[in-house]
Image (spheres, rainbow, N blue to C red):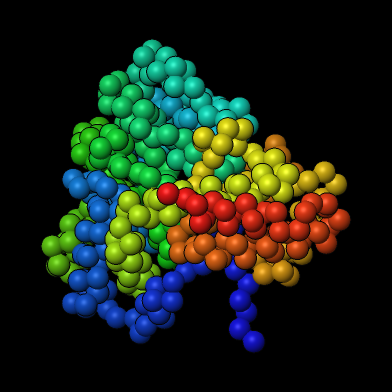
Length: 390
Ligand code: PMP
C-alpha cells in the first residue's frame, strides 16, 4: 500500500507531484537550450515571488546555511560591525557565521518566544556604525515571526544593510522585499518554496550589490563569492550558456516548476492561505489546551506552529504515536526547551485537508498518551477557522 503518512515538519515538506516529476526527469546538459530556458525563467520568477522587481537573484547548490553564508561572505569585511536580532537558534547561527568572516557582532536577544523591541534596535543602530543587521523572519526553533517592515525602514534610515533569513518564510509569510527596504532575502528550496532540499536561494537588492562592489578586501570564501556567480546568473537570464560550478540541473528544473505554481496561485492568495492555515493550526492547539512557544499570537508564524507537550507527555512517547496515526511532526530545536515542545509545519503545498488530518493524528496520539480532552475539539477548532475565514 502507498505510504500516505503526511510530512508535516517545518521543512522538508510535502512536495507537488509535478515538482517531483521534474526532479525525476532525464538530466540534460547544463548548457542545453531547454535547461538554459528553465534556469532563466526561474530567476525571473524569483523576483516576482520575493516581490523585488529590481533585485538580483542567485541560485546555488547548497542548503539554506549556504545562502546565509553567501550573505555573510559577500557583505561583511573583517572588522566591520554586524547587528544580529536573535529570536532563537538560527539567530545564534548567524552571529557565529558572521564572526567567522571577521565581523564584530552584537547580538540583541529576544526573550524566549518573544521578539526584540524596536526601540532597542533603533538605539543600537543610532549609536553603532553597523554595516549590516540580520533578522530571522521566522525562527524555526521558536515559531516566532519578526515583522520585517519597520526593520527594513530602520535599516534604510540608518544606512545599514538589512539581511532577512527567510528560510522558514519566503513564499509563505507575507514578504515584500523591495517595498519594505530589505536589502537581501534568502531561503532554501525545501520549505515554502516547495522543492526538495539542495538549493540555496537569495535575492540581493541594489544596496547589497553596491556594498559588495565597494569591498576593499576579497571575499574570504571561494565558492560563495558573488564574483563567481553573478556572471552566471546574468548569463542564464540572458539565455546564454555559462559555467562556474555545475548547476544542480534537475533541482533547478523542479524549482522553475514550483515557482510557476506559486505564481499561478498568486502571491496575495498564497499569503492569505498561509495565514488561514496558521490560524487554524494554532486555534486547534489552543482548543486542545496546549501552550505555544510564541508568547503573543500576533507574532506566531503562519508557516509553522510550536506547541508545548502537555504535562507528563514526552516527545519520545507522543511523536511516534502521531506518526502511526498519519502525520510526521518534528521535535524541539531550541536548546533551552528542546525536550518540552514540538513543531508542526504547514507551508507550501499544505491543503486544509492535510491540516485537519494532522490535527486528527495529533489528537489520536495525545489520547494514546493518556492526555484528557474532548475528542474532536482540536479538529473542530481548526475546521471553524478554515470555513469561517474571510
Ligand atoms: N534559517 C532558518 C530560519 C531555518 O529554518 C533553517 C533550516 N531549518 C536554516 C536557516 C538553515 O537551513 P538549512 O538547514 O537548509 O541549511
